[in-house]
Amino acid sequence: MKLNEIEKISGLTRRDFEEEYLKKNKPVVFTDLTKKWPATEKWTFEWLKSNHGHLQVPVYDNDFRKPGKDYLTPKRSMPFAEYLDTIQGGPTDLRMFLYNIFKHAPELINDFSMPDITDGWLKTFPMMFFGGQGARVDLHYDLDCAAIFISQFQRKKEVVLFAPDQGNYLYQHPFTVQSEVRIDQPDFQKHPALNLASGYRTVLEHGETLFMPHLFWHYMNYTEGGFSLSLRRHSLYTRARGAYNVARHFVVDKGMNYALGDKWGQIKADMAQKRAQAVLV
Figure 1 (cartoon, rainbow, N blue to C red):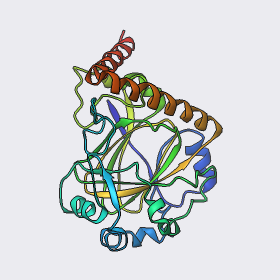
Figure 2 (spheres, one colour):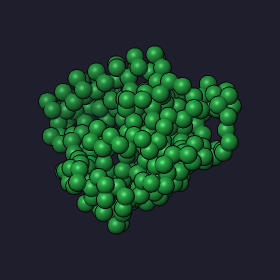
Figure 3 (cartoon, rainbow, N blue to C red):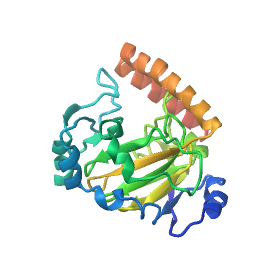
Figure 4 (cartoon, helix red, strand yellow):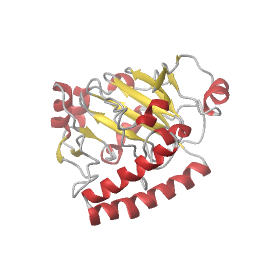
């Protein structure tokens, strides 16, 4: 497995971004895209606790995708301030996502804006993601297939990316957008095709923004407790592809998981192995 460092650039023009990165489906890290956002200085742990700590939020652990009755369900709910104390205080695998904080605290929307680096923004669906040191986002690509701009706040996060054409090496589970490989603990005996994969890596710092092209596989490791904001860019193709993914995920995958539990997880793993073996022949 080969991982190349993602370029970090300041002063990138709209034309250069669209020609060199957007059209070529190549990731890049902007070091200055958020410099005019109030959020860059304003959104600290203490400010969020003081102003929005009363919110009751769902949190997830690293067993989020473990087959069985708790598949894709929160570990528990807790006050937002208590959760922020938890991730600020030390290692924990608890993450907060799939929760639209802007619905409950709409004034936060005033603290950032859609960058003029490109068009096509999905303005109604910004998302925030939080995680403690040691939390991870297992390798997958997003259901809606959007291109993502991920801006990091307060501390660091490691990101590993693979282009869509690397999917044959990544042991994708059928009817999902999920890989079974552990990027942080690769097992090349169990997953020999992973040796052939080539991708990208970076560590996002506070105020930096990663452009992740549509359909890119991504793994994230919270090297320190922190949080990020994701803005999504869509096209007609990604909207159609995303609708298909949502349908097969919620109808087929979740339905079979509830019906078969651990057995369904093993069926998907076996199918992923067979697909990957085909590229080794």
